[in-house]
Amino acid sequence: GFDVSKLLKQTGAVTFDPGFMNTAATASAITYIDGDAGVLRYRGYPIEQLAEHSSFLEVSYLLIYGNLPTPTELENFDSKIRRHTLLHEELKGFFNGFPRDAHPMPVLSSAVSALSTFYQDSLDPFDDEQVELSTIRLMAKLPVIAAYAHKKSIGQALLYPDNSMNLVENFLRLSFGLAAEPYELDPTVVKALDLLLILHADHEQNCSTSTVRLVGSSNANMFASISAGINALFGPLHGGANEAVLNMLRQIQATGQTPEQFMEKVKNKEEGVRLMGFGHRVYKNYDPRARLVKYTAHEILGKLGGNDELLDIALRLEEKALADDYFIERKLYPNVDFYTGLIYKAMGFPEKMFTVLFAIGRLPGWIAQWREMIKDPQTKIGRPRQLYVGEHERNYPVR
Ligand code: ACO
Image 1 (cartoon, rainbow, N blue to C red):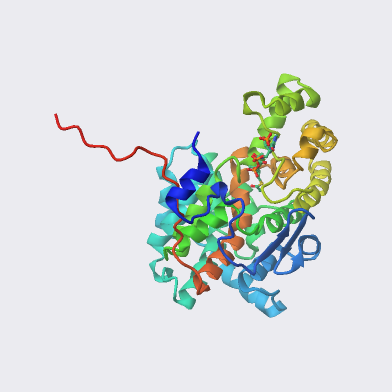
Image 2 (cartoon, rainbow, N blue to C red):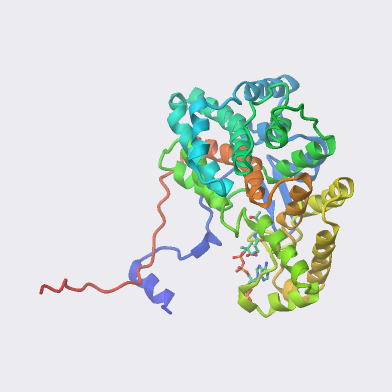
């Protein structure tokens, strides 16, 4: 209920752009998106090609260092990460301080924030060697912290990382392995998880990445900045969407609604119901990641025997939405999260872990963007302006 143009006149020359719909906060050479055409490229490489030929480790290297690694560079990167997987024993005590039913996202962000207290020798944002050390530490330790948050929530013992395994394999073993038994990796699960992590690895200036850059613009260290990004990702409109999709599918199943009845509710905006996993600030076309995920969902649910009824509901919702004027007019298409929850569930992850998996995938993107921000001579501390709509000056009532 206020007149923006009048306020702009009072405030002077500022841009009023809530949600930064049309404000570029930085120049960046990392990720290219053409939302109208449904194109996504990391450092120039189309996501489809990376999904087919690359690995999460290689994509992480590509995002962070700018080019694909040579075989030796990749091996060095891999072995450095394997050498840094151990968590300080005292940091492990941290996990006992949270309630057992805590959501693992705030546990993850707290533990990542606490890395600044345990690894004080790599906090200087302007020392290249320290930045490199923080990079490796985060890549190595965040998946371990994530797996421990999961283990704690189900009351199982924490395992030590097995450094004969790579990052993705280790994460699966630490999440599902039991101390007394050898853990056998399922190649289908390893491959599918690796793919999903690639697809989440970067997405230019999304909410969590912008948060990482904004916090980092005050010269806060990488652990602190990325911990803030994890908290941004926790919100249901961002990283929490895949969890919300699964809840939505379950609810449709439980209440015996048809997808058509549910769609009517969405279109009438009843109780603010949205079709979760649909729509995107940038993609006004089919999200290229959703296409790749949809294929994997069929493959993995076929092999692992997931809940096919939920997949059927999802497929029918998608089919209805793509043919419906409400969605066509608003250019609402499935985003990456529409099918990922079903896959994670089939792999054995509880819903609360879905956003954590997103965070593991997004980590190399956050690191790459933080490093680009710190090196960019144009970086200034982030400090948006505002339009003041509060009280005029008034006198304190002296009684
Ligand atoms: N279901 C129904 N209607 C929708 C949906 C949806 N999922 N998304 C947008 N709309 C409608 C809005 O109601 C609005 O309609 P109106 O013009 O009649 O008011 C119009 O489409 C535009 O929507 P906005 O909210 O303005 O679009 P915005 O770009 O701000 O939001 C967002 C993007 C947050 C992703 C939104 O589409 C949404 O809430 N989707 C569901 C949650 C989700 O899937 N989030 C995951 C994002 S992707 C990620 O983080 C990996």
